Amino acid sequence: MFFLSSLDLLALLVFITTWCAYAAALELSGAGRQSLNARMDRYRGVWMERMLARDMRMTDMQIMTSLQNGTAFFASTSLIAIGGAISMIRATDEVVSLLSSLPFVAPASRIVWEIKVIGLVVIFVYAFFKFAWAYRLYNYVAIMLGATPFASEKDGEEAQAHIRRTTGLFASAGRHFNRGQRAFFFALGYLGWFIGPVVLIISTIAVLIVMWRRQFVSDSLRAVADHEPSSPSQAGGAS
Image (cartoon, rainbow, N blue to C red; front, side, top):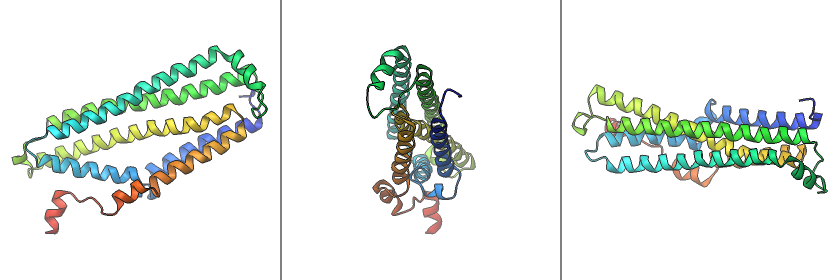
């Protein structure tokens, strides 16, 4: 890392710290339980309970297929991004020469450029693993849906335990998918480093603000936060 300047190291530290802090706040803190992601997790539980009460579950399987297809799209996009980033290493001399002629880009040596590109590759590799695992988990959820007890057995202990297991697996799939998407968003902020360390800090903060707003103050959150989801069992208990 001695090839990087002190300002580059500071900018990289800000980038990594921001990513980790945001992920921890979203997934581990009390405030994160009020985020859009957390609220959708609760709706997953409602969906599974209502699915248990249905005799015909073809619609549920169709929704699962759409979730799998969306995850597969992002996984394949990650592979394309990895290939594109690796090709940037092959054209290092040309790109460095081009960027050095631009007045607003900080000059960088070949080794510094390669370090930056390798960092970008690492981000997309991380995203690919998250999307690929989420896709696999969605396959497992589909299997669990197929193994769901009949609607006539919905009040049994085994049926309720099965729904809890399925909901937990479902939430795990969504969590890994969200982490993959988070990597994509922060990769956009990381691109600022190719211009300069100050731009990396600014772009990282900009990405953080956009993601925070979407999770806590967006129209999407208000749309689902007007009424907390209630499961059929809760509705029955209230009556």
